[in-house]
Image 1 (spheres, rainbow, N blue to C red):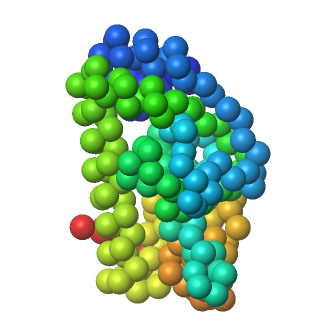
Image 2 (image 1 turned 90 degrees about the vertical axis):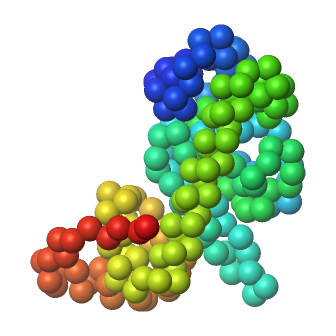
Length: 201
């Protein structure tokens, strides 16, 4: 997928003039598994979006343990660590697989939002989607059982359980690796007999 197609099909930008500007200033990078693209406390200079692969965002608690805050393998998911472009990152972002990411320079994006209403609309839409995503995770952690959270993950991230270190997934779902291993075993023993989808409102 080239940058212009990504802007039109994934970011849903309809303004051809804006797409042309974005196509000119963007670049696609290949990132290795384990690469850290931004650390908590740093001010990002560019905005990335996942093309293929997967990544996580994590924080470190008072005891030095990494807590996975977000995780995605979805094309178009933003690799951003704060709600604003020019403020320090709240989380560290690490690639979980060899990946491809499209980057846009942060200052250029802020300038384009002044020039193109459709750029501001896209930015606001991404913020709303991010809020929905984090609200979903918060709801899961506080209102659903460990089994329901695990089944939701299998449903929303098909195949990812086999590709990513399970301790990251366990942390993301608010459980330890031992609990998740038990849930995996229980599902296998029941023949994956959990047909109903988990819907988070």
